[in-house]
Length: 377
Ligand SMILES: Cc1cc2nc3c(=O)[nH]c(=O)nc-3n(C[C@H](O)[C@H](O)[C@H](O)COP(=O)(O)OP(=O)(O)OC[C@H]3O[C@@H](n4cnc5c(N)ncnc54)[C@H](O)[C@@H]3O)c2cc1C
Image (cartoon, rainbow, N blue to C red; front, top):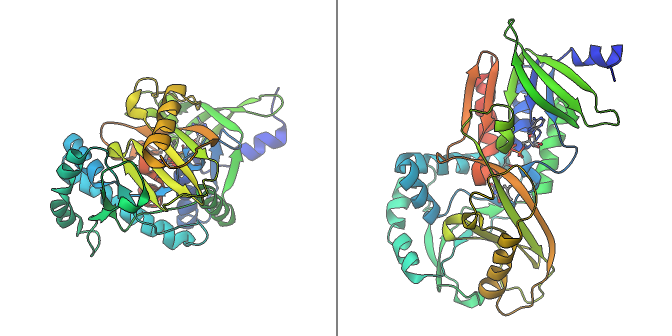
């Protein structure tokens, strides 16, 4: 079915198009609108509700546990690992400054890295003084200290490595605030349009081959003077050579557990297992390290094997004293690579990328969107 004259007129109007309506795309569009108030800035998002990692995540406002930073340092060198921590820390400060703690449901609970194996605790604990020294460039107080967790009744080593500066948000509240701010800044947000293909025109503008998810599945083109790609885990579907692997993450939320003994966020197994309190419920996610290849997909469905493993964590390790029932279960897609750093680059004339937010993109998003907007002229 052909577009109407009016629809075509409307679609011919974009100056800058951002593909992806997650935390990064929406904040980037807002930054761009503040920078260029007279330009028409659009966000094109394929899903009306439900595909963005930004509303399928665990809501940790975290920067990386000591064990994760040490693991990252082995992959990418200590300097890059520390600088990634710094980007996340500064990103969270910026996010809170922009939207306010209450609006995004921020709780400064602190984060605990827990261990089931005392030897692994010793290895990490012996290195926190060095890490603390390296991280003082970002804040005045130590990033990590040792904390006694014996009273929690978990089946774990008695002590954790505590990060007092971490916390938790309510993901839907953050997304709502980011979306509202984008709309009130004057962004056009088109949900339900999937971009299937990109083409660079001789004029150096970009043609987006789009499909509308409405009744008639119209196919049509949008031409953008400048294009910003914020598609995170889905990036390779548009730009197949980018170093962004899709990585699926599994999440479960329990029914309320009246006798729950803890509040706050917890990481284990170098960050591959994470859980937090949600009132008297527990949200738990991860276990991707048990099935890296299966989880390298853009299909947002649960993996039964990993769900069983997460349930075992709940029953045997986290709340061995309580009956646990699962109330919610879902999966979401992250964008990863061996280099844990995000891609914030101009890729071609009038083409910019802000992708590969990894497993801690909430805190990163405010900083990344500012940096992408700085690149666009
Ligand atoms: C299960 C899970 C748990 C996580 N937990 C945490 C956590 O606790 N703390 C934390 O900091 N981070 C966490 N993350 C990571 C964090 O959610 C992401 O890094 C962050 O939300 C990325 O934001 P984004 O805007 O880059 O990507 P997304 O939120 O994924 O947004 C990208 C958008 O692009 C759209 N899109 C893609 N391709 C197209 C196309 N061709 N046409 C139109 N639209 C398109 C998608 O529909 C999507 O809405 C988690 C992620 C997952 C999946």
